[in-house]
Image (cartoon, protein in one colour):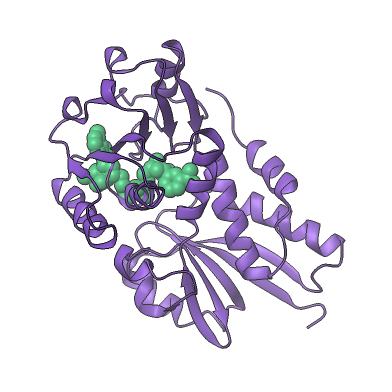
Amino acid sequence: MNGEKRIFGLIGYPVKHSLSPAMHNAGFRYLKARKEINYDAEYKLFEVKPEDLDNFLNSLEEKNIYGLNVTIPHKEKALSFVELGEDSSCLEQIKAINTIVKKDNVWTGYNTDIPGFSRHLKENIDPLNKKVAILGAGGAGKAVSYAIANSKAKEISIYDIDKNKVKNIIEMINKIFEGFDIKSADSIEQLNIPDKDILINATPVGMEDADVCLISEKMLHKNLFVYDLIYNPSETKLLKLAKKVGAKTANGLKMLLYQGMLSFEIWTGKKAPKEEMWQALSSQISIK
Ligand code: NAP
């Protein structure tokens, strides 16, 4: 084993702007320097088109790949390649994994987005009995909806331009959490944000300078907690507006850290070095 280089990485399409290599490589360097691992490890980006996914997943051993993160558009399709890890009973219904590792000779899948998001949210606000509005019903919106329902929030209202995705999430939540109050909003106004305790943006709107803010100032209030999953820029127009009305805010960089630390621990079996991984991540982000 000594001297062997293990490859880890992210598969998705596209992936070139990912901050994950800096975070994970800082973690690997830290463990190696302290002799907690006796192998070299490197985290790389693998841009894999959907039509090439099967070939890629079937050649992991040849590439010396020991573990992967999985992102858009492969989170659902990668499920068919893996067994589900323990504590993953929900994954069958959620149909989205973001971490795979070879365990007892079997490729095994996990979702670390859900506990990563939950941990960061709870550092800011306990969702128990809270009324929550969610913008976006893609992969992230699905993980967030699960985490919020699982935390016994009072209700979720969810909006996406793609009504089918909203419908799928509502069906999934109703199946897993019988009786949970989740409803579809036909417009942003229908989310009834003035009545909510928590607003979460799980759309990509806000990543680009040219993006408009989906929410108007009059919808926001100072008792609202506004969480934007976007972390680059570190302060989106939504977060700026929320701060202006006195609301508490957070961006998604700690979610990225926490999901990354959990994936790292699954791959290495070692405690992830939080400070080193955080420094590596946050040093790459600029305030626009
Ligand atoms: P996704 O699967 O593409 O989902 C985004 C959803 O938002 C899509 O359904 C999209 O609809 C919808 N949408 C786009 N514009 C909208 C608008 N104007 N109004 C309402 N809905 C709109 O992407 P994702 O993986 O869920 O990621 C969403 C965001 O979360 C991204 O910015 C991503 O970087 C961030 N994220 C952060 C973390 C973290 O660790 N902090 C983790 C995961 C994701 P269409 O498909 O029809 O455009």
